[in-house]
Image 1 (spheres, one colour):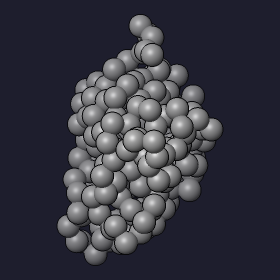
Image 2: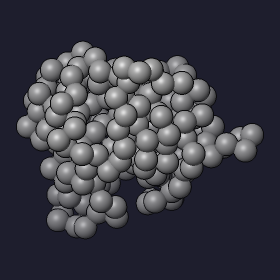
Image 3: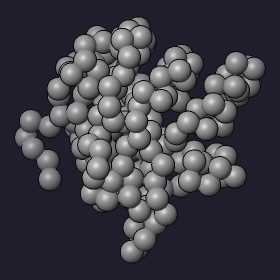
Length: 176
């Protein structure tokens, strides 16, 4: 259920809209969202460092820090709650340089990440922790797009509808 105060965003993300978001704004996101955690970050940053082509495009993309549980009851995934974002801080800069526009997770981020987000005119969105089963109801499909050998840590793409988020760090680097 959406609220009239919610801001609707669709991927690929439009930077001219992202830069108008303010810390604390509620957002509902629809479209395709990249999904991965630590190991894929390590692999991608290694590829970037070596000048290799990435297996998917990060330009104007949203990235959800999540390791979904296996699907059940006819759903595309099981529980799909956010993972702690600060674990990804050391990998965030290279991905922003590749055009990433939004990261999604839970918990705080460092002042350095807030500065990097402001520099790249990107945002960090918070998803509510502890409600992975409810968040999964907003996921229409889930497909592995790279590194299937990593199992639950593989890179995926979710198609989401009205995925509820809060702007935790805006494109000015202001934190909630």
